Amino acid sequence: MKDAGSPRILVVDDEPQIHRFLGPALEAAGYAPQRAMTLAEGLRLAAERAPALVLLDLGLPDGDGKIAIPRLRGFTAAPVVVLSARDAEAEKVAALDAGADDYVEKPFALGELLARIRAALRRSQAAVTQPLDSVVRTGPLEVDFTRRLARVDGGEPLKLTPREWDLLAALVRGGEGRVITQRQLLTAVWGPAHGEDAQYLRVYVGHLRQKLGAAAGLIRTEPGVGYRFGTG
Amino acid sequence: MKDAGSPRILVVDDEPQIHRFLGPALEAAGYAPQRAMTLAEGLRLAAERAPALVLLDLGLPDGDGKIAIPRLRGFTAAPVVVLSARDAEAEKVAALDAGADDYVEKPFALGELLARIRAALRRSQAAVTQPLDSVVRTGPLEVDFTRRLARVDGGEPLKLTPREWDLLAALVRGGEGRVITQRQLLTAVWGPAHGEDAQYLRVYVGHLRQKLGAAAGLIRTEPGVGYRFGTG
DNA sequence: TGCTGTCTTTACGCGTTCTTTATGCGGCCG
DNA sequence: CGGCCGCATAAAGAACGCGTAAAGACAGCA
Image (cartoon, rainbow over all chains, first blue to last red; front, side, top):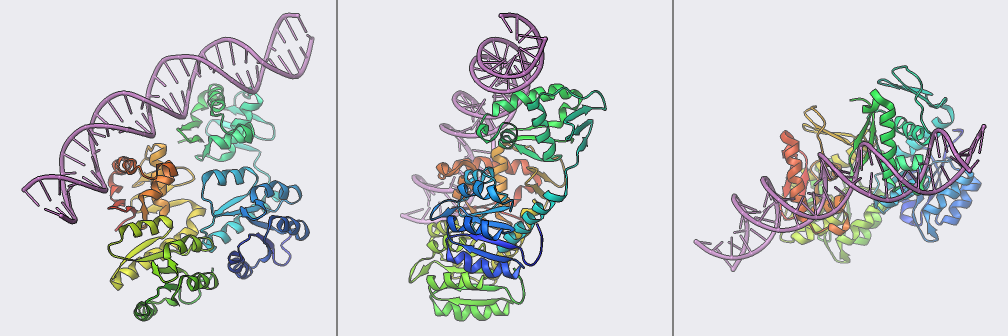
C-alpha cells in the first residue's frame, strides 16, 4: 500500500458525536477521514475509496458490524479496527475471529486509538514485505516452517502427523514465553468451529510431548488458559 | 492528541459558587477550566473540546449525573471524577460502577481534589502507553499481561490460579490509585451473574495478598465500596 | 478385501481449584 | 454496653481440568 498523500481512514459509526470527535483528530494526526453512518454506506465507500484502514463500530442501525468484516475482507486487505461499547469478552473474540485486526473498547483514549491505528498500518505494511523466518531454534528444538520439519538435538526429523505439526507450529509461532489460549490453538489447527473442544488439545499435546522426548518441557500447561511455549 | 498548552478540565456543576471557587484554583494549578452548568451543555463541550478530565457533580438540574457517564464514555476515555455529597455511599458506588474513575466527597479540600486530579491524569496518560508494552511495574510488583506473569522484587513468577490472575489483572488494569467497586471486580472475574457475591472477593483478595507477600499492601480495602490498587 | 496410519471420541484416575460454610475481629450506631 | 454489619481467614467437600489410554471411524492404498 502506497503512502502517497494522507492515508484514508474510513470511519463507520452511527453516532454524530464520534465523527465530530474523530474527524478533526484523525486529520490532525495526518490521515484523511472518510465518514459513513451505516453498514451499507461503509461497504460502498470501502469499495470506492480503498481506504488504508477501516474503523468499524459494531452497533450499527442496519446490522451487526461483525457480518461486515468478512464482506470487507472479500475485496480489501485493509486492516479493520473494531470500535465497540460492549466490553463483553465474547463480542471481542467473535469480532477478532471474524477477521478484525484489533479491538478498541469504546471508552477509548484518542492516544491509544491512534497508537493502535499506527500499529495496524505498520503490520499491514510489514505483512507484504517481511516473510517470516523459516527456521526457528528454541533450546534443543529446531523448527523449519517452509519444510514442515522439526528435529530435536539435531537428530532425525520428527515424524509428525499433519495435526501434530499444525499444533506445534501454532505454539512456536506464538513466540517464546507467550501464552496461547486453548481457543487460539483450536481455531488455528481445527478451525473456528471447534473452538470448544479442549479435549483435542489434551490428546495432541500429549502426543507432541511424547514425540518431542527431551524437548517435551518446552510445552508448558497454563491451567484453565492454554499452553506456553519456550524454555524457562 | 496534542498536549499543547494547559490540559483542559471540564467542570460540570450547577452551583455558581463551585465555578467561582474552582475556576481560579484550577487555573492557578496550571489547568484550563471549562465551565458547564447542565448535563446537556457538559456533554456538548466534552465532545467539542475533548477535555483531559471531567469533574462531574451528580446533582444536576436536567438529570442525574450518573447517566451522563456512559454517554461520555462513548466517545472519550477522559477520566471522570465525581463530586458527591458526603453521606451518599450508594450514589458513590453507583457512579463508580457506571464508569467514574474516582470520587471526591463534598465539601472537599482543594488540596485533595487537586491530588486526585493529578492521579487521574497520570493514569489516563499511562493508559495510552500501557496497552502496547503490556508490562506494568508498580512498586515491587511487576505484571506482564501478554505473558500472564506477575513477580515481586524481580523474583520467581507468582503461581496464580486463573481466578487469582484475573482478579489481579482487573485491579492493576484499573491503574494506580483508582477505586474499583466490588461489582466491577466481580463481573470482571466471575461474570455479571455473580455481581453480589462479595464473599468471593474477600476470599480471593486474601489469597492474593498472601501470595504477593511484600507487595500485599498494594491492594487496599475501600470499605463499603471496593478495592484500590497502588502505593501510597 | 484387508492393512495402515490418522483422526475422533469416550472413559477414568488424579491433582488442583473453586465454592461454600464457619468463625473471629473491629468499627459503628442505637 | 450490646448488637449488627462488613471484612478477613481457615478449612472441607464438590467440581473441574489435565493427562493418558484405548477403542471406533474413516480414508488411502495394495
